[in-house]
Image (cartoon, rainbow, N blue to C red; front, side, top):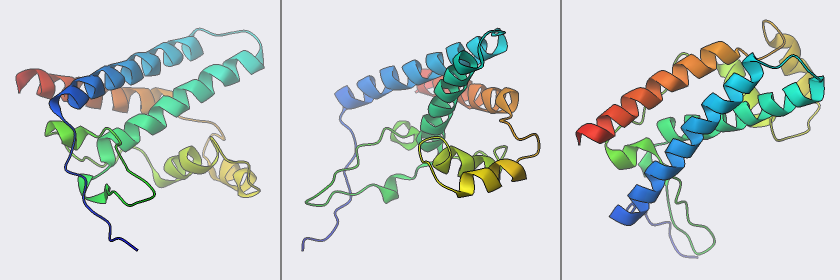
Length: 151
């Protein structure tokens, strides 16, 4: 079996595409946050906006926190995840986001499991701290884009 190899990183063209992807994530984070903030209608529509928001939160957490040394290529899988470190920014652990929220993002958002009920009971307000998540990520995004524009 071949040994894992460290990926050498993205090309300049891939990095330009990566910036476009992060801009999309940032725009969707804000759009879904605003939809949540101004929605008074059916619970199913609110849940769709919430789940969209959380998907973008999860993607951006990986972008900011993943370390390039964890990327590898094997004969079965390549990891070409766009990460902030590709642009000389980070990785940064977002300490404002607690472990229970992280666990819920990783498990509850896209997995149906019995432990979801227990995690929901452990959550302080049994919901998501949408305002804090949005503020934390918007600040990091602003810092990241300022960094990219200055390099």
